Image (cartoon, rainbow, N blue to C red; front, side, top):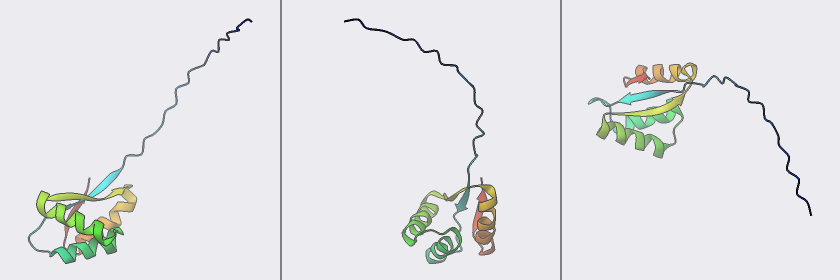
Length: 93
C-alpha cells in the first residue's frame, strides 16, 4: 500500500474590508423626567420593548448614563433629536 501526499499552494490575497463604525445614542440622567416618561420615550422613539426601556431607565438612573440604541448615524440622528425634543439629555457617540 502506498500513500500519496499532495502539496497545495495557496495564494494569499489581501482584502481590505471597510468596517462599519457603529455609533450609539447615550441617554444621560436628569432630575426632571420621571421613570414612566423616559420608558415611554424609549418605547416610542427607539422601538424598545417596555422591559428593555425599563432596564435602560434604571441603568441611567443609577449609573448616570446608558447606551440605548446602536447603529448608523443616519438612523440614530432622528431618534436622538426626538429624545432631545422630549426634554431628555442624549447624544450620539
